[in-house]
Image 1 (cartoon, helix red, strand yellow):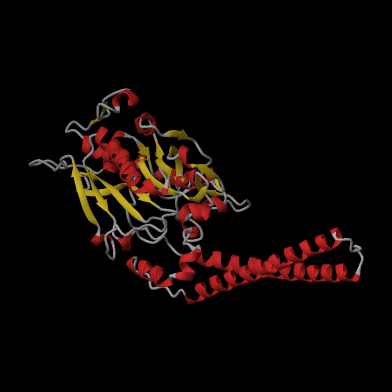
Image 2: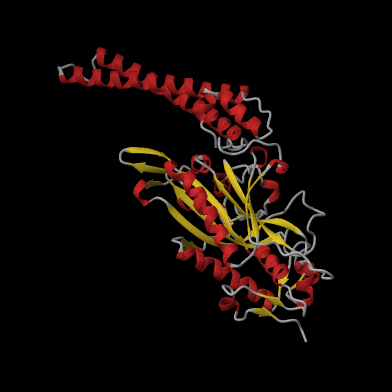
Length: 429
């Protein structure tokens, strides 16, 4: 959520920064509410100060010998009661304005970082680096897509899953289920060795958690909600982990707090119909290992580089070629100030596909969630960062396509073999 003081004092800056996102926002109404709220707060503070002064006067008169029921004392007490009534009215008006202002601010995305490159959409994103040698088909060779390989090896079932749920769900079978489990354990162990604390949070989250992380109200239509409760299926572990410290003040010496969380994730994928209808790329339910940092504002820039490097380490350990893309201002996610996307090479599809998005959110989520850090006597909003480390289904897809062999089997990287129990998925005899 954006800073109310910045909205009141420098709305031109907010307008200019949101324009970098491609948004033309009129802040006049929001700014008016913010100023009205500030004026009411100032009036209330002045009245409360006057009420305190009158209270002291009453005490001084009584100490000086005036009777508690004397006309002079009673007159002051009447004045004090009138002030209390006025304060109560102002407090109610403040609550109304505060609620209206919060509703407005919750709809506004984060401001892009000054370091984020300017641009309108994904065509203006900047390639930072590539790693590994993308596999290309040799002469006379045809490389299959992951869903073709999976069907041939019997790794998952799509058609029968429609009976269980609906389209865009899969049931992993046999070696496919074992490979998914192996990848989750491998990723958690790798990040655990890098100093992340493992978390297994609830996958049902309340509206306050979704609001704090920036999912509500913006993405309500893309989330699955329980009809009879204030609970939603989490779209990403970022949501419950953000709320792990909601409303807390964390001592600065304890920062950074680094968490790694595995959760199933649920998204409606609204607006994506007709895209990636087969396979593991775009599902309503998928598994993901998420990295999350709470850090001091002074260190969030280097933390962003580190969390991205930690996600890259998974791809490198699995020997999967990828490229690192910095998103331009017009392609940033709602809560992000700056983002690196990691795109893995899928030789069967002949394209790079996103497998991780690593973002620094500055104090945007912390302000929405009321999370602060205390450095000495000073208290300030901390910064949050998140990154997929990695999306498990997409990692499986990349392994199948990059490891496919002429005999129909799939070779697995050496780092994963101890988790899977073999360095190869054999073709059926």
